[in-house]
Image 1: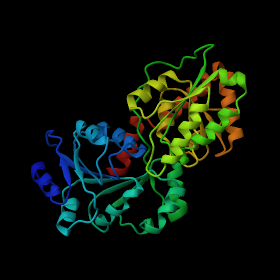
Image 2 (image 1 turned 180 degrees about the vertical axis):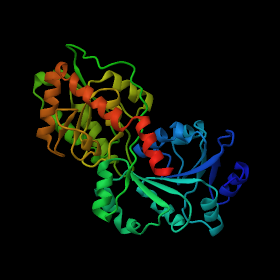
Image 3 (image 1 turned 30 degrees about the vertical axis):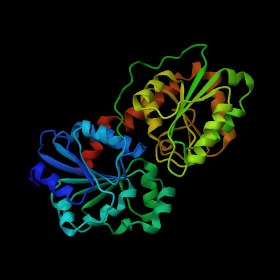
Length: 375
C-alpha cells in the first residue's frame, strides 16, 4: 500500500494509452476511482462533488477512464491522477497492481461492472456506486454480474432510494444509500419577484429519457395569456445516438414564442440560471435522480418532476415540489399553469424543497453516509 506515486504511475502506465500526473504531494492513503469516461455526464458531475468532500483529504486519488473528455482538466485541478485505458483487459501483473496498491477502489456506476470482476474474492475493499434505475439495470442484465454472488469485499450503494429498490427487486439484494452531495452555493434567501414573467429552466442532456418533447407539448397547450407570462429556457448537450432527437427538440423550441435554447453551458452558468429562474423542470421518462433538481432545491427553487425521477421519492406533490405521472402531459400542464398563476404564493413549497436538500443531499449528510459504508 505504501508504494511511491512515481513507481505506481510507472506501473499503471504500462497498460494504459495515456497517463496524467497531477503533480500534487503524496498523501497517507490511496484510492482508485473507476469511471466509464471523462465526458460531460450526470455521473461525472456527482463524482466530482463527492471527491470534493473533506473526507478524502488523506487520500491520494487515481482515476481510470476508458476515454478522455471534458472532465480530465477538472480532475487534474483537484489533484486526481488520470489513467486512460480504452480496453479493460489487462495482464495478471497489472491486475495485481490494481488489487494491491490501493486502500479503496471506488467504482462509479453499474456500467463499469467489467472491472469489478478483477476484485471478486479478494481482500481489496471495493465500493460500487449505482446511478441506474431498475429499467436501466434490466437492459444491462444479460451482460451483468449476478449481484447476489458478489464477495463480501464488494459493497454496493445506490444514489437514491429508487436505485436501492431496483436492485432489491431484480436481485433480492439490500444495498446502502449513498446520495449525491451538493455543496451549498445559495447566495440569498428565496425572494418572490412580483409581477414579472415566470422563468422556467430545463437543464438536461438532449435525450428522449429526459422528456423535453413532453414539456414542449405542454407549452404549446398553454393559453395565450399564460404564454405571455412565462419563458422556458432549455440547455443541454446531445448524446451519441440521440442526435436526431436533439435536432427535433431544438427545432421545436425555435417555433415556440416563449422558449429559448441556450445550448451547452458550463456549471457556473447553470448555477447563474438557478439564481435567475423561478422553477426547474425534469419531465423525465427514466431518471435516477436527476442532479439538476437537487441543485434547484439547494437554491430554494420550485421544482416540477415526473414520478419516474428518483428525486420524486423524496417529494410530495404540492408540499415540497410538484410531481406528475410520467408521460402525462395534461398533468404536467396543470402544474405549470399553477406555478404561473400562483408563483407569488408558493414560497412555502420552495422552502420545503430546500429542506429536502438539507436533510438528504448536504455534504454533512453524505459524509456520514460514506463513513458508515467505508469505515
